Length: 468
Ligand SMILES: [Zn+2]
Image (tube, protein in one colour):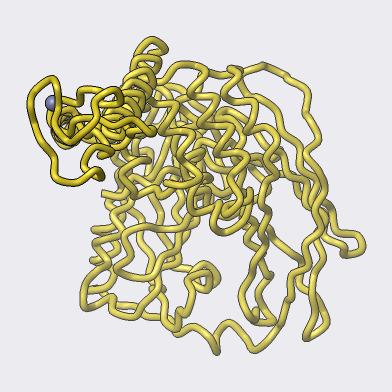
């Protein structure tokens, strides 16, 4: 790599030096040879200082005016030679640039250094860099250069600004998983602040416990675990602690429950304490990241029944049975070994037009709940939102579809449908079907986006929804 870089720069220095030489040659050929007071024959350039008259002793050429003896000597052949060489070299270079692609010739370091000027995740410079990253052509030092640039941004894209989030942040999110754990390339990422956001509905029905959606974005090295302790400033209300890994490209929001507030128009203030540690190191110490205070307006208005109209019927139930056919995927290892397969696209039908899905899915073993998954999506959507509310891990490890002891219970739920933005109607049916188990090809179950200390009591968000 390094010798390639040197050759590249030497090549360009050589080209520039050659051009300088050619320009000098042209100047020398056309302008340098002045008479400087000497009389010279304009034909053979014989010095005629010692020759009186207008005829050259050397070649016999006769001039008519004295002025003709003081002409500047020009060498047009040399000027032409210089001109032709410049054109030829330029032609050769541009041809080889077109043939190989300009960017192919640039060394990786030059591409990285040019990022502040060329940064565009759809642009050709970044694409060429991605091609080399995919081909694993970057040296450790170059990986560090890329990550340092991404972490520091540039004058137009300061870290955490919108412009940065749409450029360098995406590069980090896409490539941090490729970095060697604990390597120098990861170091610049450790300095980046997380972005904490808490949002909620414009208004909550008075008979529903409100929830806040907590999103936490970080650009730390992959394999970093984050602990969030959320303490609402409400008297007697305990803190909720939840954990996330950064394995997800787009982390779903954590659904933070808030007790019903008595005031009609109010707000809730949440203090968040954030720590992080590397998961690779067992029992690594938590390192403090910082504390954040977020104020969220909380408006109570109306009742759940006024907002959402239940819809039932065999046609719509049939669609839900296609979306949730009882199929689950089971892994041998991992903390969340059984996951529900959901085909949300099945709801992209006429009968489901304008109807939101909000449902509680329970996996039952002899009537005992082994897992509860809450799901919600606007009918027809391809992706869904979900939250694992309960998991009995030892029981789930025994899950099987053979002896008929395992079943899947699906129930429409208004409060979950309320999480779908703009929902006015929701599926209110329910059914219980036999559970079918499909073995996963890989042995380790994918991680959940969120975990809590007490998984069986508090809501946790998760699941890679096997959609399709
Ligand atoms: Zn002469």
